[in-house]
Image (cartoon, rainbow, N blue to C red; front, top):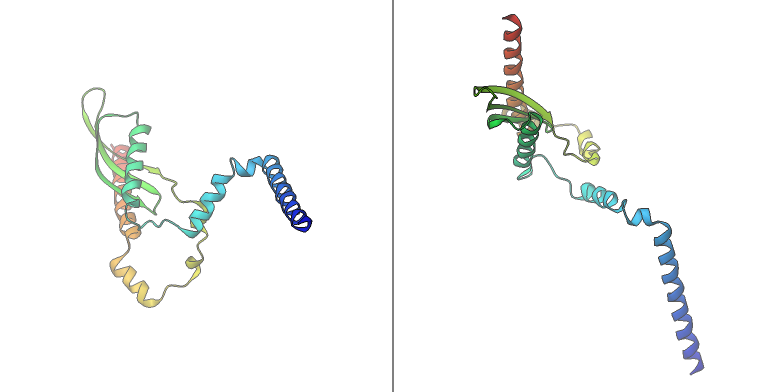
Amino acid sequence: MSHIKTVLRTLFYSLFLLFVGASVGFLVNADYVGWKYPLVHNSIYNIFFPIDFEDEGVLEYLYGVGRFKICAFNGYPKDFEIIEEAMAAEEWYWCKYSYTDSSGETKVKIDHVRIRWKPWEYYYDDDARVPVTDENMKKYINEGSLNSNETDRAYRLRDEMKDKYMKKLIL
């Protein structure tokens, strides 16, 4: 009976010391448990469960953020309405919009804003180093991708904005 008592006492004190050591470790390194936890959690999540531009709902979300930023940066103009919008290179939101100025005149303007939605892990993609096959390149040139089609639309808006600016300079 005394052997069982000794074994149980040894187990109890071992677990107790382990608990005390873990508690002291958490108290001494509180910054890792507190504010650094979300950073580590998000990094792990971004590495193992990355979000791609072509995933469902991403483009709509980015359009919403872009609309809000353009509206906010311009002082929430009256009767703000998006006419046309596009994303260039998955980060630059371009839009043509109309609004009513303080004199009651409706104006049309083209503007852009950068939406930094990608985590740092997005830029370190190992698959990006794999060369594209000829077949995939032909398909990309003929059909494009969501990114290339959006970028083309954004460049058309950019060119339209430049043309309007150049016409103002000439007049």
